Amino acid sequence: MNPEPDAARAAYPTATSTEEFAANIAAVRARIGAAATRSGRDAGEVRLLPVSKTVPEERLRLAVAAGATFLGENKVQEAQRKAESLADIPDLKWAVIGHLQTNKAKYVARFAAEFQALDSIRVAEALQRRLEIEDRTLDVYVQVNTSEEDSKFGLPPEQTASFIAQLPAFDRVRVKGLMTLAVFSDDLDRVRHCFVLLRTLRDQLRQAAPDSVDLTGLSMGMSGDFETAVEEGATTVRVGQAIFGSRALPDSYYWPGGTGSAAE
Ligand SMILES: *Cc1c(COP(=O)(O)O)cnc(C)c1O
Image 1: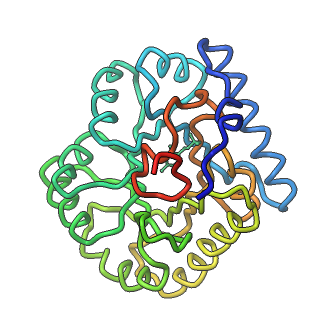
Image 2 (image 1 turned 45 degrees about the vertical axis):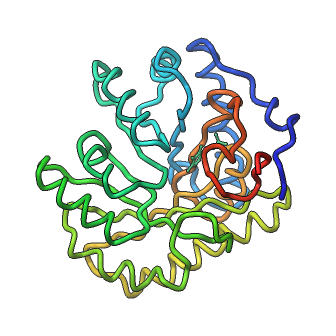
């Protein structure tokens, strides 16, 4: 519907040195800071999660040297491969931020510190079983579909309360908040609406949430919309291209069937 214009994609230069990564990270943080100030928030409440999908390991090392300590990946196998090859870096953590098939829960349970796309009880069950085997816990965000697009993953907002009510059964899965992808659109009002919806939902659910479920977190905002997300209450922004550089392939490649896809 709204293919990302080539010009917009070309707008992010590829960082190829520690200095360039440090500059990009500082620039994103400055924009987070300005957005926080505009909305009366403290920038310290907002975590910047660099998203490194498609970026090769050598360049991830540069980003780590520039201060990255937590990296987000949307495909499990790619994330696991990178986690193994960067295992020599102390304290580097991984967040899986993309849809998970039940049969891949075992990998996530092994290496990830965080999983941001929980939207089914079957996946919660599979994670619980595997986390018990690994004797680990996992921080998770419940993914909500705020864009009313059928093709995207995430729970419909009206099903989120009953979903969350079932999660205390999975004690290895530590709920930290809600996550969403906004509509892919140049219309910032529509994008903002998605973020407002997630925040409003979080505020409602919080009142009735079971004790073991922490709904403080709001993971929302990417390179194209993170300032709007911060204005609307994001506690984590997931930023890839503005730190690493433009990806060669359009977003439709990573979110098959999603709108905003030029390839369909
Ligand atoms: C790739 C990705 C991002 C980051 O998108 P950029 O445009 O690179 O900032 C955020 N969230 C998810 C789920 C992603 O897959």
